[in-house]
Length: 360
Image (cartoon, rainbow, N blue to C red):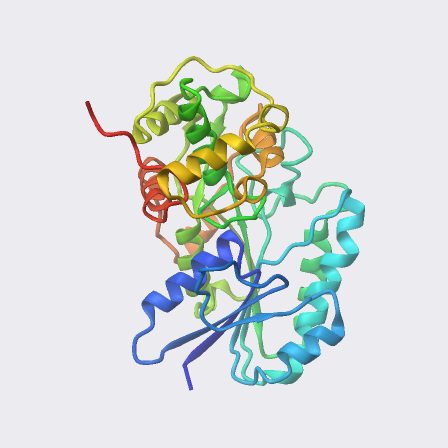
């Protein structure tokens, strides 16, 4: 039996997919086993390893799909069910966590750690300008916010139990997972490919103000490493941590860098409502896919234009303080410029986007 058996809820998302890939690559001598968990089946051609399709909103489905997982020692919960309003998000997202935990506690007597993923919305980043750099001790905003309900339930549940929990609050996450709304890397890359196909330069499509504000990013690979650290660290028990790459950037500097990585000319920013302007670009994407032999991802699944439009039009600083995480002993960091280079290269190697044009 493996020293650690990690159950990853939300295995097809950016964080879940990256964590599973890292665990599978790092396995030596049976130290780590990983089991993916999600509502939808894995996409054709993917290899998620051991994977179970379970509807966390259905207690009976949880019982059927999870009752035999007696070897699980760690749970990583990165599942999310969107709803039209913040109020409507609370009940289903709390129920999914509760349904999973109630079965897992009975089935897995060796369970010793639960990692819950939140985000900067815990500070009200989705509501407008918020106090920055945001610290884990900052007061909550006016509910509803399902993060609060999940955290309070988990903290109460943990009393008189042997397992501990850690909560991570990442800034904007960069990685790869198709069909995931929180995936800005692919949004930018697909937007760039369409721009190139249409013979237009790679313009920043957000507002001028958004082009100038301070940003942070976090590589999904860094989150995966932090999750593995937290699962074994005494300093991470029952604690909340912000996590970022550790640096700052403005799109005014990063966007020309991205254009250079993709071999495209840049131009001054121009406000382009992505939701509206991408509505008719499905045939363009299909032509790109066929010409370059890309993976056959449907245009409606490869990128979320509402998420891209909202993310690239944020006109206030988005900065999380990570002092607490460093004091706890997790000292790793990433260079955001190198991160974009690595991710774009990965998307090209996996045939998600076209290769950069050959130098003339």
